[in-house]
Length: 147
Length: 218
Length: 94
Image (cartoon, rainbow over the protein chains, first blue to last red):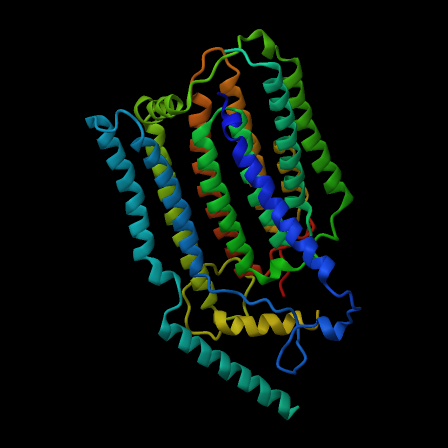
């Protein structure tokens, strides 16, 4: 049988998933009381203070390396899975090839993880930078107060 | 193995359906004002392209596409968007020059024209219709081609992955050195990569305070 | 057609992330074309499919490095906007 006919059930399932989300959203929209919203009601809650600026925080850059590591491990896993379902995976040449491939990528991952502490700010450096920034801000405040 | 009438119709309807979904999603991924929506549309588009691979009798590629593209690369871009709060403002698209847009339309129109000529005027129907192998056999054939027949490509892929890892580690180290430099003398291209801890600069934690403060009056 | 969309996106967009997304869309279009070529040739070989596997892997590495470079750009110039092609002495020195 052609492949996509075998996978017909997947399409039906995808359609059902989309329909489920749409039905839930539509039902909640229907059942919601439609009251006029003003800017006071829809502003973000900040314990009584006025919110200044958009609520977007920048996360530490150190998490980015893990995402890259995941992508590389994913590609490696896909290649290895293809080898694992083949018929010649126990021949000598295939085993050596696979070993070389795995060793190369694992060496890369090991290098990345070994160098990982050098890519993020350590505790001492962060403390030093915070103190310098605080000193700079305090000196700016005293300058502004003197003017 | 000839196909019946209903199968041909279903295949054409499915092809058109998947093609429309993919094109709409790709256009939305590029043009939508909020970036977080755009990258999510890109992830969805990658899954729809996997539907294309189903039509084209490539079962392993379906899984590979969804795993690597939607699960990996899309997550990578979402992560990049997450790390950059400045990129999430929607005010950057107002200032497109008309000249650039015309050039872009011209180039992409030329590419599409070329592919349309290739698709319609090349005698595809003169080639005998090939019946693709079954599921298990196609996996075997693919593994045989890749690993044992042309195994050098796999090692090259390993080298490319190694390069990507080493490069990203180097770039992250350079970024850390950037953060330790003094903030007042930034944007100077000649002083790149210097690990200078003597000046005062802003750590990532205090950077968010300044980022929110200068986003307020904007 | 995906190739055309991706190329248009890469040229016109100023936000760097959208340029990267445009490169991805173009890569996807190329992959589909490759697999289509592999099906419609006389003898059914696995050339197209295997090449697509390799291209997907290479694109993954390329996107990772492109994102890292974009982060570097952001750290240097604190923006992700490319700006207009003005003939001047360089980026804004704010």
